[in-house]
Length: 327
Image 1 (cartoon, rainbow, N blue to C red):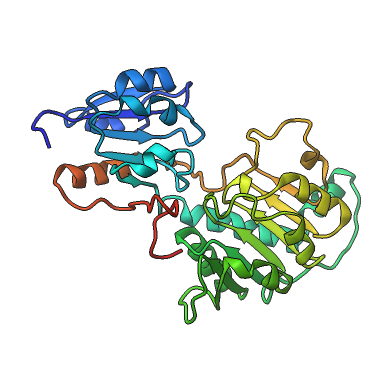
Image 2: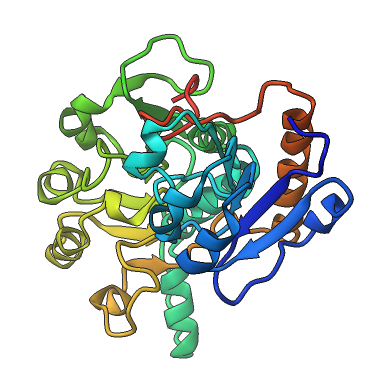
């Protein structure tokens, strides 16, 4: 590596500046902010590092031919699907992600949604708005069965949190594995249809890859229990939205809590908004107060490892689309 300050190009959304906390690198690196394909293409020549905060961008594909010195790409998100263009996959440039930053808050979100379904918080709210007193019985949370689709670090944190209050939690990964510390069992994704009928809650915590895109459609919803609920904190395109709406309207499943969608933002006239058994949040399940600074601190730590010639943390397997070893 050169003794000169290396150039770091930070690709952000159009309305954002340098991420909070990255100014700590002012004396160690040349920081350049890009917002789109044109500005990224202008900034990339000579750049050693690219940090991407806009995970919805297609700017990387547009600007890639200008990356003549790139040695490392970092994504400040757990999912890296937007970055893994054919050119990036084929290159020798390592990609790292923000694995570990969002795990705890996402697990809390999932547990909160499970409790909300079991205790019918939505029903309480509707009755409160109508000033109507209606005594009801609700479901216990302990003893409910949960299938977490995606056995990586986020899925494992979900399993630990849910198990701690007495839920029975199994996982699903690329392959079946016995004797796991976090899950009662881990099934292979190929067995999804056969195991879905056994669970009260199905939580999608998988990354978006060619193997998971469209994984949940008409057949999968019909395989689930009629009383089951779906929670998606992974990526929107893992679920075929039209099939989900049809399943909810037909009573094939009892409800859904959705933090991610095929189209984001979710259009204001989308039928999901009006379904009484659906909870919607704006792709925020892992975002906690201070999360942007935490992401910057994680990147800075890895940057100093890169400067020292040490192995990077959270290196993504570009074939599979995620950090391997736990999923």
